[in-house]
Length: 240
Image 1 (spheres, helix red, strand yellow):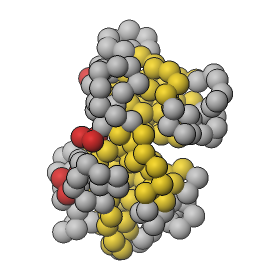
Image 2: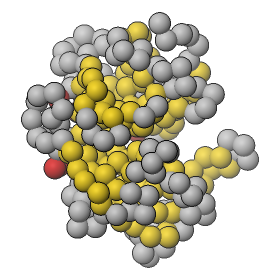
Image 3: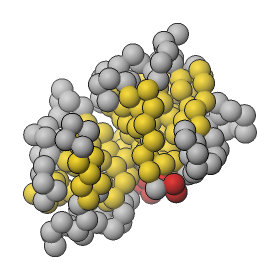
C-alpha cells in the first residue's frame, strides 16, 4: 500500500508492515469510520484494517469473502460494501466487520452482475463497475437497483472493460475504461460527456489504468497501473 500525503509532501510505502497481514493482492481501499484504512486483498480473501502508521489492527471477511476487490463505505450508516468478484455479488458488513447480507447474482439482466470490481459510494448511492457486463450499475444503500448506464462497443464512450469509478462533488461520474486506456466522464444521468487520456506514457496518457478517486476539491486521481504512477487531473467544467 502506497500513501501520499499532499499536505506534508510525504510518500510512504506500507509493504508487509506486520506478519499478521502480508498483502498478496491488495486492490480496493477506503477510509474507515475511525480514520483507519480498509484494504481488500483478493488473494487473502479478507479486508485488512490498518492504522495511520500502516500497522494492522484487525481484519474481517475471512470465510465469507472469496475474491474481494472493490470496497466502499456509507459514511452515514457505516456500512461497508465489498465487491466479491468471483461470486458476482456485493457483500455488506457493518462498521465492526460483521457480515450482514449480500445482493446481486450472476447474470446480465438489470440488477445482476458479472465480475463486479470497483465501487464508490456517493450521496446515498453505491456505484458498481459491472465489468464483464460493460456497464455501471447504481444501487441504493439497501441494494435496490436505481439505474444503470453503459454498454459494450468499440466507440469512445462505450464501456467494454470498466474498472475504477468515482463521483465528484458536482455529480460528475468518472469511469476508468481499461480496454482503450481512457478516463470517461459522464453526467449524473449517465450521459457521456468526454474522454480523457488514451494509450501511452506521455502526460495525461494511460497504460492499463485501474482505480480512480476524487478529493473534496474535485481533483481526479487515476492509478495508471502499467506506467507505474498516479495521474492527477483538475477537471474544469460543469455537469450539464
